[in-house]
Image 1 (cartoon, rainbow, N blue to C red):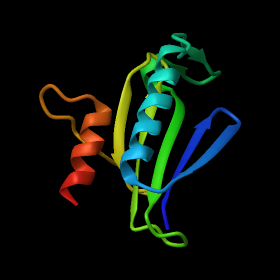
Image 2 (cartoon, rainbow, N blue to C red):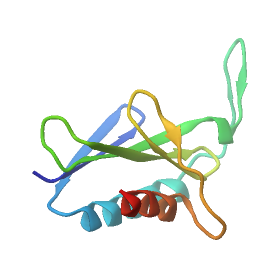
Image 3 (tube, helix red, strand yellow):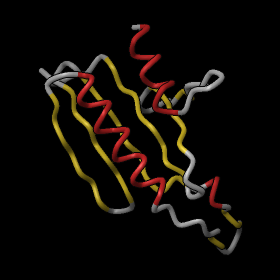
Image 4 (tube, one colour):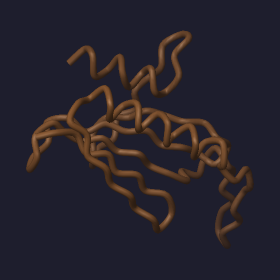
Length: 116
């Protein structure tokens, strides 16, 4: 048992395991902030559409646990091209976690997990 953190940034995937939720959330936030600071603030022109930096997800950080085979909790943070972050829950059907006044995406995720 434990928590699994998966960080997808382009074609690269990194995984880490943590014994407790607090350590996993700390690692998720540290890596998310790192990726936000280095986010390329450029638009991408496809032949059919232009994608602005805030529309592009440059990294997805997912946290699953505490069960090993079928985790009961799946949450994460999407880091966008403009450096912003947005928390979500779910895996296939992602539901945005709305940040309350004064919260960032990481605080909203901690609040959500504390409620369960």
